[in-house]
Every structure is written in C-alpha cells, then in structure tokens.
Length: 324
Image (cartoon, rainbow, N blue to C red; front, side):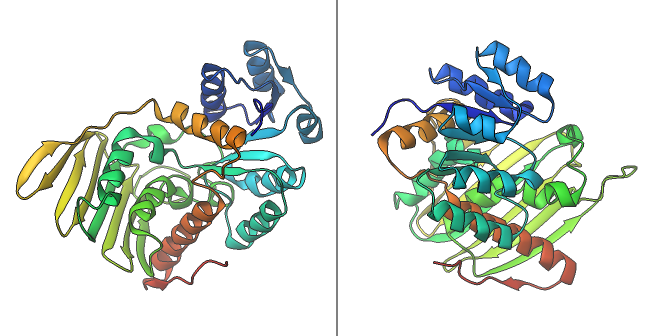
C-alpha cells in the first residue's frame, strides 16, 4: 500500500490533455510536465499548478509515476528510461513498433520496481466491457465467433507523424490495436492470422494504410475485425456469439439474445478515460499489477504486425507463443 503517486506527464498534446484532466478530476493531478514543445508543457503546468521541466531526468526527479502520451516511435526509449529509473508507467498504445523493442521493454520492466499499464481504453468503455463480461460469465456458452467493426472518416488525421509508418507503425498498429485488444480479450491469443490492408483515400501523401481487415483463428472459435478511415458516416458494430446465446452492439445499442429472446444489456459505468486512470492509480496505491499490462500490449503488437505481414505476403501467419 502507498500514498498518492507523484505524477509526471510526458507528452502534452491532445491525449496528454485528456489524461491531465482525468487525473485532476480524481484528485491526483500531474505536477510535472514535459513536451517537445515547451509552450504546451507550460500551458498544462500553469493550469494544474505544476512545473514545466526541460528533460526526462528533471521529470524523473519530480515524480514516481510517469504518463507517457507521446507518438509511438518515441515509446521504446522513453519506457526503457522510465523502467530503469524504477517509475510506475502508464503508456499510451501501441507499446512500440517492433517485437525486439517490445522484448527489450519487457526485460526492463521485469527488473523494475514500478508497475506498468498500457492504454487500451476500449476495456473501460461500458458497452465493450459489458459484452465481454456477458461472455466471460458463461452466459453465452463457448465461443463461436467475435466480431468488431469501426468505420469513420478522415477526421482522425490530425497528427503530422501519423502518415509516416516509421513513426506510427501504420493504422493497424497505431489505431486498430484498440480493436485487436478487445478481440483478444474475448478470444485469447490467436493461432493464425489472415490480414488485408489497403490505402484507399485518394489525393494524400500518406504512406500508411487507411483500411484494415483481419480474421483470427483462436483455439476455440474465430474472430474478425475491420476498421476504416475512409467511410462516412461513422459507425460501430460488435458481436460475441456463443453456443448458448449472443450479445450484439450496434452503434452503442447493446442487447443480449438467449433462447430466442432479446433483452437490452445494461452497460453502466463511468467515463472511459476516467475509469482507466482510476484503475491505474488504484493499482499503484493498492500494490496490484495493472491489466492490461505488458503481456497484453505485446500480444496485441504481435497480432498487428502479423496482419501487416499477411497483407504483404497474401498468406496466413502462424503465431508462436510469447516468451514466458
């Protein structure tokens, strides 16, 4: 058990603002801020009566817990430094951009006294969570299939690094891993992956994909996932089918069907980013390991990279078990 963590925020852009707001709402505001743009760090420091700092060493001197809300290509070095400094770490997704980097991070975390959580916030959306709990309770029976589809337009394209695969990892790694984490939360680690990605939007100099589709072969049942940045209006659809019933969410309207009878599925819960940060802080103060943590972050990355490889080769990819 411990007192309130002393929190530093690394990355003060859009998602950094989101986390800073939730921490303040929980009565545990960040007090140290660092960003490549000192003005952005200064803005949040002034708002939350903290300090804008010049570098990682200075940030680490001011905190025991770090929120990493920077672009994906910076994650490896920053997580490694924070782990080696013994800090508790919340890192935005994805973990990093390659499995060798992921394994280096895993080694550093094993030798760290800090705790680690990855920002797969769909687990804290009430609807996504309620669907998974309906399945894990046994009410639906054994898994037959799980499906996730999220479609949107290009309003997501607001980050200059996003279109560079060396910085973002592409749509599959940077964005679609949210959906993959939920699919794997339901079905477990797949044995085989088949994937297709495409660049469909005309007139853009981006070199990353903007549509992705995958089929996942679980040890029991299968999964499919699809995401697009080139469709309008936006829509969202999720479904878990078991051998004794199924649960479905169509644009947030969720219902469970068993024995031919349909009923609305209650989806109570607080705002997802608030719930996510509440859980992270609780894990620190109560001495628990956060979930999703490193293991979940690595397996999602492995599947995302397999989807991209499958799309390049036109072949299904057999996945090996992650290292113990």
